Length: 461
Ligand code: HEM
Image 1: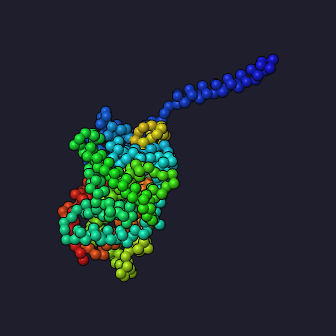
Image 2: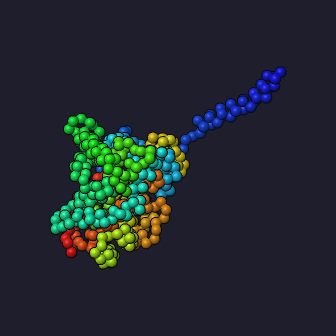
Image 3: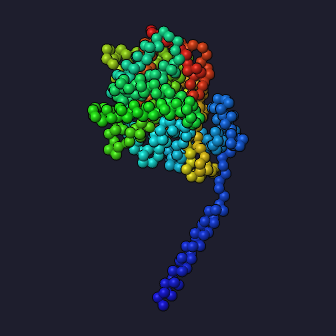
């Protein structure tokens, strides 16, 4: 009797639940997926790679955007991609729905930089690395480096005096030395020659085919990488023994309670050198070009810097001095916008995502096109003109992203701006320069750079 009652009572409930799930699943599978964004996928496998790389990539992006709007599909280097060029879409991918888009890099880059480096990581491990990196690069931590950065800048400029030099090459030496300072503190001098020797071999293979056979670029790079890891292991063990009082990146990595392994530290130190050096050197090279071409802006920056020079008398430049450079800061911002050295970044959809009525399928690459946003005439009128005064008014949110946005945005941006200001202080107060040959072309390696790295002649005033 009891059984009969229980059966009669629960059977209809179970049946209704069963029917509900059946109908829901069948509705789900019948529901039409939204369409893919407009655009073309080109030839099988090669897609539109040739169209992209046979010309200035920004011409490719701009012509697609003109034809299809701010979200379109294409197929590059064997991967289907969705490219996006509106501030709202970039925010969606990089900030609000960043958990649906993971960072993605070519396999060879991942192996060379080290698979445990911050760029490739996600979730808790990424959050932990970010905390450690930000701790070493926030204003309070980098303040004390200002006088040493100034000495490095003075040395770099002095070594170029009177010679025909490639601005990018000289700036790379400067930014490498500042990166080593931020990683190893005042100890940097002890290791810099060995680390540089290996790093120069390693970087030659960054864009090579991942063929690990004796004699290939990739093989040489991987060997150099192993040697860097050996040098770093020695530095780490010396620090463990000596326990010096430092506030640099290595210290931040080593003093974490949960502890990073030596391998994780090595991957992230190589990663930071990679992220810090060519980026900042490219921006400095563009500033030298734009100041050289805009005498009135150069004059105004020089006057601002000379006033600081007079105010400091015999003392070294200080952190407080770098806060008295509003015009120089606007020149840096405008250069970051016009040059947009990182034209775009890569993410990959971890599941099917719907955006503005379009489907971004799981596994497709998604490229927020920073440069297109920075060159939009609706956001920055007369976008091709170098005009620092436009930054007298703060740009609208999500329209200016030279350092990216969201969880993977640049933790080194304060250091980058600081080292640029310090170099400009020395350059404008003590030197004159002129550009040798034409300065109109752009090369990509992979960051946007004036043609041939901008050959210049530098003279003491
Ligand atoms: C002007 C120079 C620089 C520019 C334009 C720049 C730009 C960027 C951008 C756009 C990103 C985000 C990439 C993405 O979302 O996929 C990024 C990430 C990063 N940058 Fe910079 N950067 C510069 C200098 C530096 C410096 C000096 C350092 C270190 C001292 C640094 C360390 C990093 C690191 C570690 C990341 C990865 C962060 C993460 O994945 O969480 N960058 N940078």
